[in-house]
Image 1 (cartoon, helix red, strand yellow):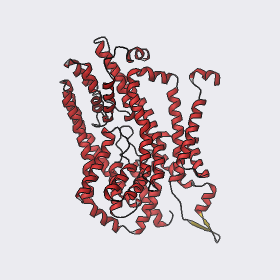
Image 2: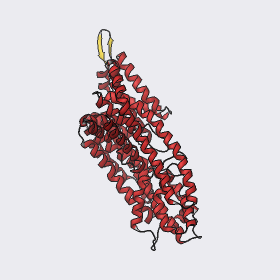
Image 3: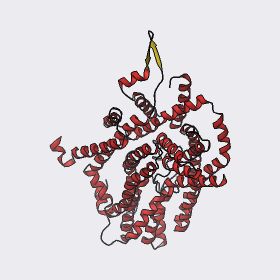
Image 4: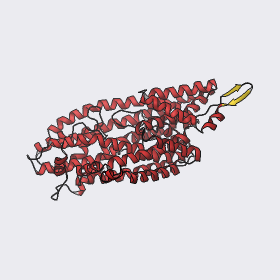
Length: 281
Length: 249
């Protein structure tokens, strides 16, 4: 509905009140997003915390400032790493609001925030949690399990390079191009393509980890007409590591059916102890 | 012991605050906290290895969306610490870390509930245009999160280490061996949780491709990640954009 509106409303133009320094403060303060996380409005107070330098600069009059402060205490929740992008957009819109007082529809500022947080969380979670972190952790764990401290260091470095880059750049992209950038990405279907391909990479790595990092074998031997058959050897002939794969898919199905993670964790411990005791595992 | 307890408590606080005011740089994860605990308790290598094991187990446990997940930071720190203090391996760390993480989760839920009162007071200060007091409300909540990290880890080391030592020594061998089996199975849960986030029918072949590359060709994670990245880029280039969609389809 607001496609057209967004284009001319959101992007900042030449006479900018907000300088680079203040925007950089928003970037640093965006790290605080979840500092006062609560169940009622989630990241709202952290979001406002990041916006305060901007609002103080834009609204010298107390009543205007109060309205703006209240505006950013509304419910907000998204992937922390991409929050600075939304803050950049809010900054551009607040600036416009301050300049075109009375003309600009200030309720659109929150409308855009609310419209963005869902889709951005979807992309953000799949990138940062599902792809970057998984790859960084996969590489880190394989080094660390041999006692090498490089594992932890590489994990942090590999994850935080894209994290800092996108968080920093995102602030300025949001401010300068605002929703124009996002809607053009969506229009061409590029965003979908990018997150689809990130999903490919993520799944390949998760598949490889299933094959290398889950150790799940059985010592069970079955006697058939006097001959002993080692079950594990037979399974290995069918496909190596078929048990880890089966276990992972089984747990995946249980999660899909809505079984609670905590129950599964306790269940695994119970199965491990009972299985060992019975000589099956 | 008091000094160690304070240091471990501070590690817990830093870990919890990572996702709060440090932008979630991931030093909250057991993979990073493990070595740091090892450093404090004088067994760096065990810290690294136990941290890696717990990371593997909890890889899929993340705070996505609005749910509060099991507290892997506190679970990871105390699990690693107790494994080092009792001279036992990763399987004992895991057996201790799982219940600790679940217990600590409820503490995190409590903090997030109490924090609701701070945002209500912030509403009032917003009305008055008082940014200083709003910032104070924010920091009070941060302070609660600090305690959320510090208190259980500090008390865990100070009061818990003897108790835990007693428990660990009393565990019969069959149970310890069973815990080892469970520890080996646990990563499957992590990957199942990750699949829940990424798996779709259309993308499913790529999961099995990764599995096959590792199992049949014996490739490590790093080469598989490189191959995966190349495949992702190639597919990206092959996918039609809207402009040439009519031409290709």
